[in-house]
Length: 279
Image (cartoon, rainbow, N blue to C red; front, side, top):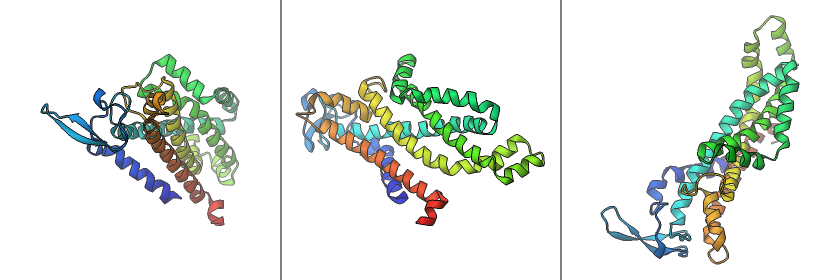
């Protein structure tokens, strides 16, 4: 499972990195004469020297004559950046808050009530509200998705800390007067690494879906930046006549989320000692 998910992700990362060379044309180039071409059609593109050349529109063109294939490749970059960045930031913030909440009993109640309040609000609605307050943009979208994801990480880390805190080796370290920071770093933190790695994969997948949903609703990344959500949103008006405008970005989005989830399931089975014994 790990190899399957990692293999698909490696291919997607390669496509994202090589988008300038694999793409046939500029993803933002508009050609009204090549509107809504079917996949595999030939289209004329402008060259830097002022001439024109024919290229194959592998995924067809959209309502403005832009090459869907090139836009999907560049959209892979945005989705991967959003997914990985959200996962890293959410884990970093949630790890610190979770360690504090789980280890210090006096702070546990107030911190967890704040986290419960955030979790009571649907994540997509909270993200939409935050984007509306901060205005659109890539950084804004990332921060808006991070905020609803932090409580999940906090609850996970806190649960691990509460169980580890009562272990004999931790009590022994406390009895000999070990500093609090040393207790957290040496004895508690290593126990959170495995579950956080698995949680990070699921956060990455949900972040990519959230970014696509925000872009589809028109409150995420600006339309001039090619993302899978923007491509789907712009193609929905002609979906019945030209379904390729939605089909290809939708397939890439579903395949990426599936690969990340498969990778997360495989890592969970590998890193969990109980599951490893069963396997």
